[in-house]
Image (cartoon, rainbow, N blue to C red):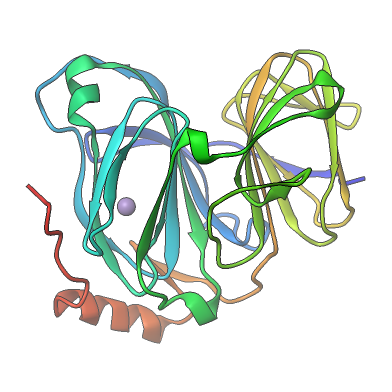
Length: 290
Ligand code: MN
């Protein structure tokens, strides 16, 4: 049985641009070996925006060496990038963007959502790329709610949406560069869940609503990340209330991480190269930017 290693709480709140009031749940700057291949998690909301005609969000900025994954629970975000990727995602949808060798992108509230206002809640995860794939061609996967397999949990415990990975024969459509599971789970009050996961994998639960108990005593509550020990293959927990959580699981990469702003590479030489490439226009341009 996997034991709780520790609970990670937010490092504090800040705004990303003027559209994303986030809690920084973890980053490779505070825990990276424990969370590999996951580099960072920002939790935006839950909050609410008033209707506006303004464009709220974050303008053009670069990334290299990893993937940004945006999971929308409420609200809508529109994305454009220099690899001609783009689209609007809403509640239940996921954007899985591979920055790879380098991308410029912008992330704004959709025009419709901005005019309408209302509840807003999203997670942005940064997922590391293995050293061999850090310079992969940039790409964009817009994954709609309808494309994400939904599995009924055993014992009428609730549901899991398989954003990436596989559970009970349901395979997520997302392409990933290393093995991982990213599941949006909804558990009923008083339910129990357990699953076999590969030995030695990173495993963590981020709670959005409700409460989860691991073992006899450890309670995990909203905005908390429960990080499990690598050792052991059976993950088991109880939802003591109606619960929404994100399960993260994957093969640790065990490679050096050197991060500088929007770049996450394996060496300082590669960071220097990224800055030089950005300054020389090698990240392209956003054609649809306005
Ligand atoms: Mn970004």
